[in-house]
Structures are given as C-alpha cells and as structure tokens.
Length: 131
Image (cartoon, rainbow, N blue to C red; front, side, top):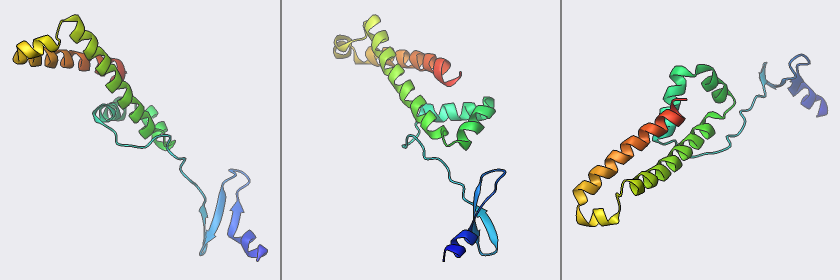
C-alpha cells in the first residue's frame, strides 16, 4: 500500500510542485490561497475594479492571481463609505444644513444635501478610486 501512495505522488525537484497521478496523467496539486475577506462588492469597489482593469493592469493581474483582489475591493468600498459619511457631516455642519432647515424648508434641505453628496463623492472618487 505504501508503494501505491509513492506512485500516486510525484514532486518535481526543479519547481518543487507536487503532482498526483490521476489515471494515466500527473495533475499538479495547486491551490488558490483563501481570500482575507468575503462579501459583496459595492458601487465604489466596482468603480475601482473597472479603473484597475483599464489603467492598472499589472496591479489588477497580480492581485487577481494572488486572490487578493476581492479583499482589496472590499477595503476600498469600506474606506469610501467611511470618508463620504465623515465629509457629508462636516460639510453639512459648515454650511448650516441641519435639522432646523429640514423642519422649516424640506426642499431646500434636500437640494443642499444632494449638492453636498455630489461634491463629496467627487472628492472621494478622485482621492481613492482614481489613484
């Protein structure tokens, strides 16, 4: 039985890759490393992915081959959402877009908040996504 196990496995001395015998062929025992994070990639992660595919091909390929891409995109997603939340609060406070305005003039409050969100998103896209 030990002889059969020895025959089923083969290690190439040059590459140190282990092979196993499957039928008449030796198949390499290659595994993909586990991803550090799992989850769904959101809007900002997808934007970064598209940017990397178009302009950062070597980094994209390396991360994809090392199974690091999804974790990286999830980190980018979290970073963007966090920065957006912080900047929206800061800008709204600075421009007096508060609960009092919301209670007195909802339409103006919505307009101001949408304006702030657009500006903040543009800042975050330029600082995080398109770098």
